[in-house]
Amino acid sequence: MQNKLKNKIIIQKYGGSSVANVECVENVARRIIFYIKKGCKVIVVLSAMGDTTDELVVLAKKINPNPSEREMDMLVSTGEQISCSLLAMALHKKKVEAISLTGSQVGIITDTYHSQAKILKIEADRIKKELTKGKVVIVTGFQGVSTDFEITTLGRGGSDLSAVALAVAIKAAMCEIYTDVEGIYTADPRIVLDAKKINYITFDEMLELASRGAKIMHTRAVEVAKKFNIPLHVRSSFSKKEGTLIMEKTPVIEEAVVRGVALTDNEVKITLCNVLDKPGIAAHVFNDLACENINVDMIVQNVSHKNATDISFTVPKKDLAKTIKISKKISKDIGSGEVSFDENIAKVSIVGVGMRSHSGVAAKCFSVLAKNKINIDMISTSEISISCVIKKDLGKKALRILHKIFGLHKI
Ligand code: ADP
Ligand code: ASP
Ligand code: MG
Image (cartoon, rainbow, N blue to C red):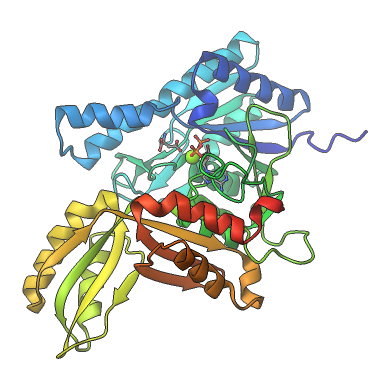
């Protein structure tokens, strides 16, 4: 049989749970050797072991509740160095040549936004040189070096992005994302026990699911994969089974109306009360937030009474303090009223490209929530998704109800 993988460069990314302990690291080494024996050149991107990044964050907060973002990046970027060097040692023990390299050593150049840096370019010369020497190249995920020569990180879960960006830079034949579940499911299988594995999903659907809370893939990683049309294979590092292919167009003839559902309680709702209802106000508010790199998600402006209205919007929880501070300043500038916030919210979403051509999806979604006495606080839609903000304690229930009503447990 012809060996299709001979001399091909493949990228494999292993998440934290796949390298959580010594046995897991050795398991990863065995997988890599399997591909090496097929004649592949392998670039590995690793996350930090298990919950290391979370633990480092806790450690920092014990020392200083408000650590500087630069020092946080210095700290959390170390997690990936540990897993990478250990994997190199595991491969050396098995007589496989391997070298671990940091984001900075391989030339992953980013902008200067600590903790949320964007990749500007990748100078892949070092990687190519090491591959030519016949080495497995192991790269620390999640980090790069800024144009100011500072260590930066790409946002939580950012190792997926490192892997996809490297796949683009190296023109890899394959990009595999190894994780602790067998692929992309119709819902988070930890919450919806009868969620089903999906064989194929489009970039667009994955993008919507990821940005609406499905933490299995980093949103910006999917964005980059879509932009450069790099199919991704998401699969388990603990089994040999095929996982899910994320691609431009699936080979399925008729697309599902709803492909999957997602939940997040990582956002908070801010309300600017008594805002003057006149041109330019919304522009002012959202410009100021954008200048501070705050990602606003949903926006609702209520009907105005006596020329004043309330504007509510959601932002990531981690940006709450910064957003309140800016909103209070904006409120003072534009002469509006109180600034309030609500952390007690969850956002539940349904996603599917089939929504483009099917009517009644929104009606079905809202009706089933109403029937279950789940009040909808905010709604946003795109061509292929519908999201509702509801009370936080009803999030999981709503997710399961929507999963069932759209028949996802039966696919
Ligand atoms: P890794 O450490 O490998 O990057 P993550 O914890 O970031 O793994 O992502 C894997 C987790 O994503 C799974 O354990 C699962 O609970 C969660 N998840 C959320 N939504 C989905 C989904 N639609 N399909 C599969 N897993 C999902
Ligand atoms: N270790 C980082 C995190 O926990 C990056 C990653 O796992 O992708 O967010
Ligand atoms: Mg992840």
